[in-house]
Picture 1 (cartoon, rainbow, N blue to C red):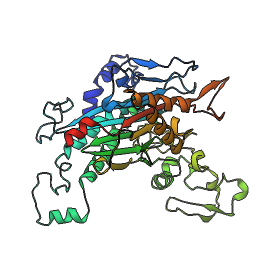
Picture 2: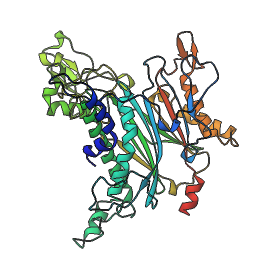
Picture 3: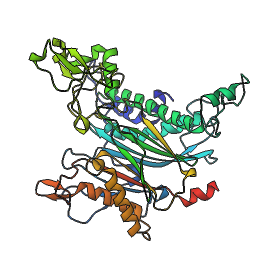
Picture 4: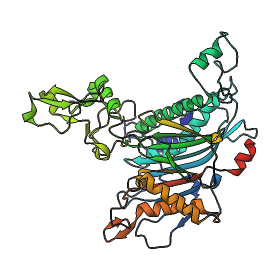
Length: 465
């Protein structure tokens, strides 16, 4: 799928609007900003909690319009950190059909076809930074990218051992042996499609943000159920947690300044011009001072997990790209290479790592095979943005999930109610100027969005049998 395809399908109205605006001589035509909205599945009808809550109501879909799989969803805006809730969400089916080679990309594969070849189920959360625009675009586009990438390789994801050639022919008689030696399975082709879709969507959004002369970014956490397997792809610090009766399993790996350190440092080595003579790619335990020049000081570069000693030079006194440790680690700048930030300059942003154009790193994908597990009715996948996880550890969330579902076995809306309870728990209550938890510690001040996805879907299980 090319970026031109997206421009024709989704962005024509924005470009027409831009063309109608009067232009000064020599002025570059800019795309208008995306209109702000909430997730489409809320359809403008929300349940708003009745209890007093200041300016942070908890919202969820109307009960007469349930989400697929009886999925629960709830959200609340930040504590006056910004005007808008920058989180976005998507929940939908993805219908995948055989790709008819020879037809142009203008074919209406976008429409749900009557003769579906495969059906996947999709949930995603996007936490916008620097504004909601990138999160809105990602929530609009990523599932279409995933659909298209899956359709390109659908012949390979219907076989446990994917054929070397999509047409099933053997150019070399040893083709199956080579595939087996590489241990390539059906799941690997799906994971590859997800990774390609993230990158394709990233490039398109980067181009559109540049065309609109805007900067910003978002995190992305997506779950895809396909052929009995659950795939979770994550970029940045949202989190997916599978909660069962006796254990819980993290299904996402978070991106932090420390996990991204080597990639960013290597990027600075390859493109030193991006540093703008203001930053150093080296990491030190603290910000260096003039007295450190000439001294041997602990440091590490992109190729190092451990630490070494470096004789400090004057250039080393510049701002480090990464500073701090653990959850408090910070990026003092984010490198922008083909990510819609104009002249590929280093943009100084003193904030967390996710402030960058959409998905400037490859997502990490985890797979959980539901067909090999004895899935129970109370087994659920919790997907949430960092507004939840900043104040509630995995153990507390798992305990709350088990207790709530055990106490509400007959409630047909219990997954939706559980999502709201999780948001209420992380948001806390307002006490004067502050938001606090029951133990009087600070509650989350961030946007909070939560999906509760029951893993046992009786309709799907009956079809598989």
